[in-house]
Image 1 (spheres, rainbow, N blue to C red):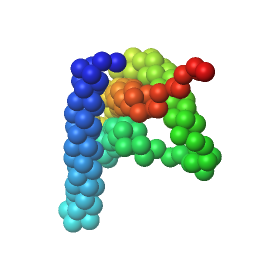
Image 2 (tube, rainbow, N blue to C red):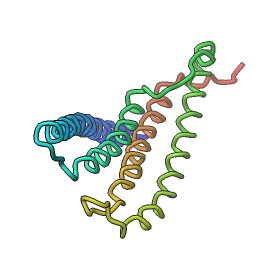
Image 3 (cartoon, rainbow, N blue to C red):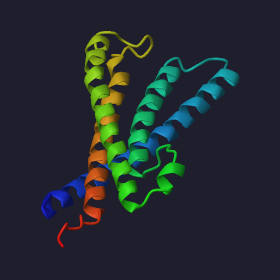
Length: 170
C-alpha cells in the first residue's frame, strides 16, 4: 500500500472515529435526558412521554453498534491475552492478523444477512413513532461497516509494523 493510500485510510479512520465518539456522547446525553424526562412526567405530572421509550431503544441500539466499532478502533474488545502474551512478537502479529481476518469475515456475513432483515422490516412501522423498524436494523449494517474499516486499518497497521522476514541466504 503506497503512502498516499495509507494516509487517506488513516485520515478517514480518524474522521469516522471522531464522528463516532461525538455520536455516542450525544446519544448518551439524549438517553439520559429522555429517561429523566419520563421520570419527571410520570411522577410530577402524572403523565408520560409516549414515544420516549421507543426513541431510547432506537438510540441505544445505534449507540451499541457504533460503540462496538469504536472499541475495535481502540483495541478494547474483550480478549483472552494469557496465551498471546506468552508468544513472541511474530506470534502476536500472526494471532492479531488471524483474529482481525476472522472478525472481518464475521461482520461481513452479518452485513450480508442483515440486508434481508432490512428489506423485511422496511414496511413495518414502530408502534408509537410510526417510523420503519428498518431504522433500528440499519444500525447493525452501519456499525459493522465502520468495524470493517477499522479492522482493515488494524490489519494494514499490523502488516506495516511487522518486522521484515529474514532472508534464507547463507
